[in-house]
Length: 139
Image 1 (cartoon, helix red, strand yellow):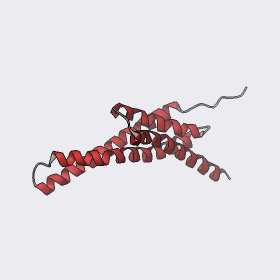
Image 2: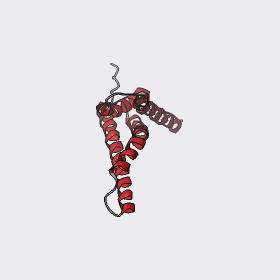
Image 3: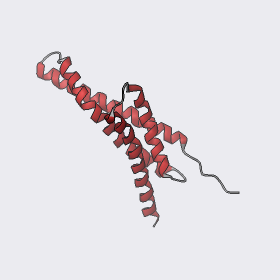
Image 4: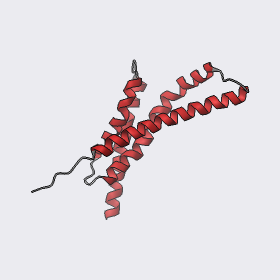
């Protein structure tokens, strides 16, 4: 009897969520670093309006890019460790990582939709990277 290949659901979900959490930590660290820099320049309390303006300008770009980069490596890891690697395993890592982002969206615009599509695309790229590397090693 043919043995069915198993989908590494636990790895997919855990690495996707871990990529999201780490991307949030990166964003928090960038914001804290900016606030600290402002506080050092002002030699006191930083200007909250400057911090808010920085956050409104940088976070919409930094968030999806950091998440996509983390998903790229997370998907590569999941696919490399899978017994029967598939490209869609990487896409699923990206989808799992992008789902919590929906909690922070009120009225999604074009930039938000593109930001939601970047993690699955980078997951596909990470899976392709892992599979092509695996094929090159086996030859």
